[in-house]
Image (cartoon, rainbow, N blue to C red; front, top):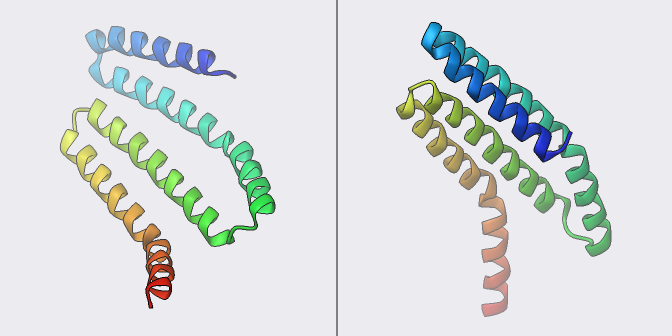
Length: 128
């Protein structure tokens, strides 16, 4: 499936959800959730391409594996947090969605701390 196909699936789900909200509001939410999950899992399937590219980059420049692993974790945290937050906001629970976004940002900060510390140690060794 391409981006156009996924976009059509999303737009169709939204149009159907809008129609269903007039009949039974919760059915529209369930339909939007199902379409979101479909698109989410299709996006996760694209990770194989990304992982292959990261392996090739690692072989080319001999970068420490921890850095690429951290980069992948950050991308995963971002994707999951945005997806979850969007669903919460669409369902009318914006405050929970905002809390998920904040937690995602804090998680990214926590995951990236070893890289920041390694960078600071490298800079310190040059300055001393």
